[in-house]
Image (cartoon, rainbow, N blue to C red; front, top):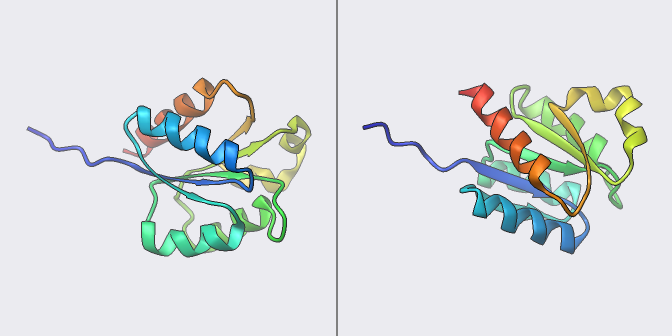
Amino acid sequence: MEVRSVKKILVVDDEEAIRSLYKMELEDAGFEVETADSGSQALEKLETFKPDLVTLDIKMPGMSGLEVLSEIRKISKDLPIILCSAYGEYKQDFSCWASDAYIVKSSDVDELVKTVQRLLEERE
């Protein structure tokens, strides 16, 4: 029988309510979830937590999500990254194209959970 390891998700968002919501919903879906409230904290946790996927807020104080995305791509070209934003217009920004998916934030996190599952299945 094949033993499947629990996939690890790193949720990066400066809003505590969003981090808590995503963490709860992704854990309910069977993932191990770690959170980071800033880009620099996310990059530190990348080393120790070794996530299978990252959700990344675009607008954060200090280091923006797009800067974090760029740094993560230097470390790992294959790590799936989902950009999350309250603003749809970022979809047009070509620097977003380095991500694997783009989700407009909403209280309905079904799209996020489905996208996480799809990207992880594609990697296997």
